[in-house]
Image (cartoon, rainbow, N blue to C red; front, side, top):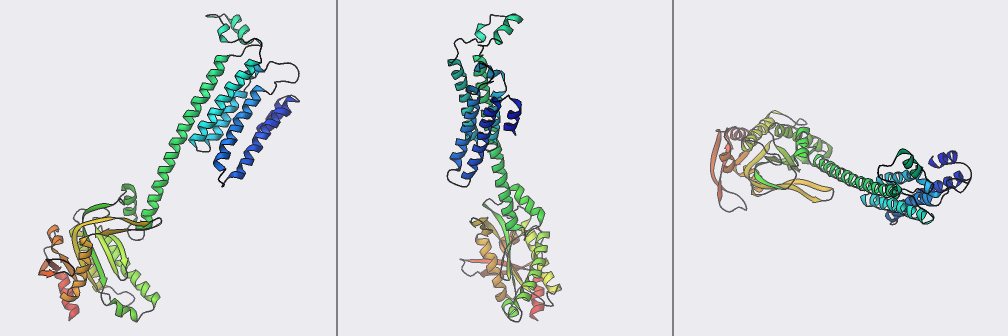
Length: 409
């Protein structure tokens, strides 16, 4: 479009020369597209913008203003041709590459100085602002600046300086924009990772809070863990079709997750017919031990009162409190959030110990010590936990003991 505008704006044959130069610049830009996706792409961009800036320099220094007579080339600075450098710099900004913007500005400023030098070297006599007296009159000023030999070297230097400053500002703006975009991309990637890890397990408000507060960073804190497992699952699954089994488990785990959500916990993982739940990680909550015990009682009551695919499911629950390490593990896109620590292992061991002690829920002494609102817990004394040194005191909710006695009967 610019080439066509020049073709219509200037007289023949100057318009043809300017049109040809502009068209060559455009075609050069198109040929650079062939390097996209290759190892020459970066180099091609630098060459292209150096070529564009050089084309403007050629327009200034060598293309005559008219074919109608010997018009001094220095009068080219009275036209808008210098402004073309800004178009080239603006195009470089679109690449979002600060080095490329600075490179283009360097060629533009250098090209303007070269054009000024080249034109000045071909002049017999140069008139500049230093020819003006102090406080010149109107007539003297007009006579000087409209002199055919007037070059205005100071103005040319000022234009080169302005091009350099504009380029530096544009490069800084591009750098800032790239950093903003990069930070935004990291934020979006973190948000996608959180949604991938927790979107199916916890409510949307908690997911948003995890994203906003950046709680996926590795952390160590005191938390209460719950491990729940379905009683007699192996025998139960033998008489069911796989599709029916999955449907039943989904319904059962959905019911458990709803209870966990109400009590501020987070489902960390589903392990076959078992589920690992955390209170106070990854999100901090007040009274995590009390919340875990309430959730355990609610899960036991739910399993006693509801049927899943016309089947009654009973659970064994282990609850333990202790310091854990929590964070994401894995590589690349295959990452998961998990928790490690003695409390995790103890919760699982307590769940298994229910079989030997004839209970539905066992709670470690640390959880009871941290809980405030569960006086109905009954001590079962000191017990030895498999693969652990020493013994610990364990408790069971009175309701859970009653349910266990009833189910045993």
